[in-house]
Length: 277
Image (tube, rainbow, N blue to C red; front, side, top):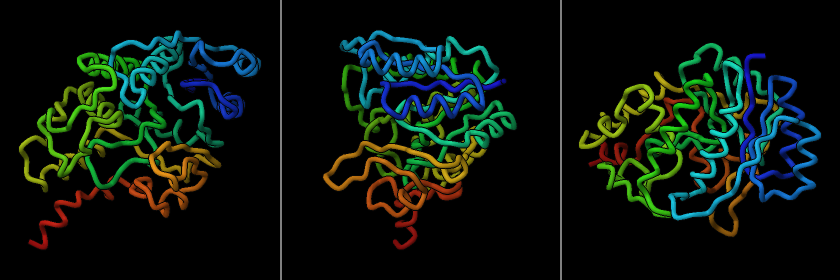
């Protein structure tokens, strides 16, 4: 087997189900926290002996959207990975057919393979971060770059996108985890993502973004990975949090329905609006 699934995050009911699916397709490493209930740890251990238990340390370092915990648990799993390729997944999600992801990584091992759930069409630098897959060497270096990137920010600081020289006209108004992943994956490829957009006309921004996606990312749609459970913990009383089909998130009245079907779906609304001026 040339692929390892890194299941990261707090343990839950879905974790064991995910382990039992993924071990039919590759190696499995579960990277979780020492605050998880002992019975849950035992249950997961019975299904997967490759467990990394990380100390959950809360300090003053940057952790907006739990990005630090996300990165730390992912890196801890990657450090134990001995296969050529790695697929990072969440502990509270699963999908029954990972083969299209494995095939995509094998075909393009230098790209970052992601899925389309919450890969937003209406802003730049918002790829999905629920599944991340590539060659293991690049994955490790990439996650380390992300950790270094956030080291200059304070705990729960909301970083305005303008502080990076960008505009909320075409990017999410604050620095989110997805942008951190995009910026640092391109940095791994010796590309300064900010310079592609800062001070540029909207048409160039949209073009540059689509071009970098096609050159450095793979997209595998959720509809291709079998039965799945994907989660979005959004705001609002009527915000759905669990999705089991593409139709659910394409037709849902939240930001989830901005998910793309292909990279060509990227369209900056401000650019469309300018056509009517």
